[in-house]
Length: 418
Image (tube, rainbow, N blue to C red; front, side, top):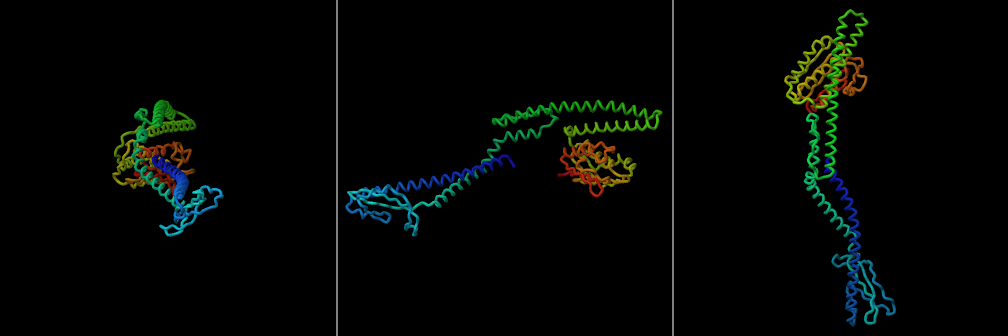
């Protein structure tokens, strides 16, 4: 959910609560004000009638439908102003309605009179209906206003955020430049920009140190490995015992494996740091056929039958070196983890690349083999980095990699088009 939508939902939720509380307060305030003003008005009417009666010989002529005049004993105490309600006939509505009634007594021309009058009462239902209609109308207007203005306002207020997000997405180690953001008048964005600038500068420094270390290590370790391999080959060609030959062969095999590990780790580091640039149109069909031809002798030695279901002239957009690494690692993995005799089936279409080979049942979840140095047989010649390199190449190009073991078959499927 977008930030502006979350803000809007929270604001509307708070507005609903405020409107409910405000509506209840307005209802009780209106009700008390209306009752008070009605009482004041009825009291003023009674006072006017009392003043008129002072100049009249016969007060009874003032009696009307809504005015009641009754003479009380002179020695009776004055009745203070009283306000209540009663049921009376309402002419316009032609029905009995609940009405507010007011009364008090006056001493007029030496006589004691009690007068009362009444008027239509504004009921709670009428007040509630008015308040609800008003609040709903205001809320709808607020909703329309927010819907119209939130997008316009958010574009202006959140523009520095979107600009910063774009710069973060475009940040790469290849440019070797820390993040630099446009100045913002919003304090929170300025703090965020300052933090991101410091963090990117520190990341570049750490990356440079690690890169130099890995490059130096990879370079420096290759020389002693080459020397050791050369000396071991010389020893193998010298007069030695069978036991010594076995030890020397094992040592030579270990040095070759060490060389492969160093080379593969260096390749993975380059892939993760996105040091391969310049994607091109690569002919996947031709690349697969070339790789199959390169491994033809090894496939024959291991008694593996190879089946090809490759559509002609398949073009994909990727770096040529990475495309070659992808195909070589997939084919090499299928050969190493096969049986004797066994088979490999390669299927390739513009949307899917699939390798299937016969092999032993995995001893663990096959998804773990995509991690570094994870392999089914610890004693195998594999160094456990082939599928990790394949997975990293797929991530860089947006391909989807799936590894399954179904019906005695290892199946590696790559969706070339998402």
